[in-house]
Image (cartoon, rainbow, N blue to C red; front, top):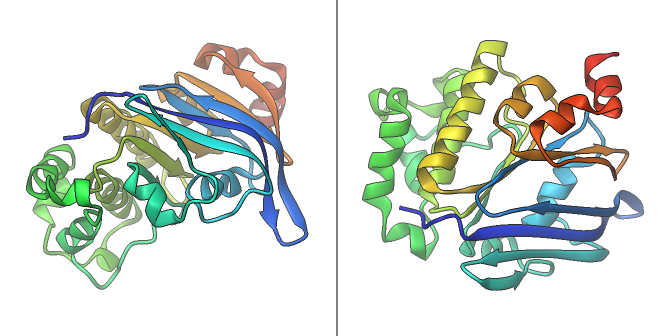
Length: 247
């Protein structure tokens, strides 16, 4: 299984965007080893661009993105997405991006493409089915015929198959009924606990996100407007109350 939670992420002074459009401006945030950090913001404020910048899908124009894994510092800026994944940093993208015409098990096996994961494929597959019993029941079902909640389970389990150390989850609540959002958050928390993961989650569902957060940030128009050192600090903040609670 994945090692102990000796993996952290540090983003400093990050500028990034698309062509002439600058989406992120001077973004700095810290994801300490073994913690779940939430990046809160409504649509269009830069959460996905930040995730894509960490994963090498968007090249930052300024700033640094560094991971420290088992005491080894890794500069992620400039690496390809494949190289980032090889370091054990894995993204569950918004919209899940599964292979609808493949079965559950085929989708999961495709998650184990990095060398460190292939060595543990059978053990991680067993753990996936233990954590997500419904997937064990439906391992031969085509993913495209599953519900949104079931597909989110596949996306999380596929990430588990890649032997992650740092897990990025982008908008896991999108398109899910409220009761499924709650269950999805619980599954992310359980994965983190069982695998000793470090988690950065981008989410606009404030109430559900803070249930599993150790700390978090609020991003507005590409700037970090607030850093909460705890879930309680996020709930007590005036900006958060205005943006999310309508107070």
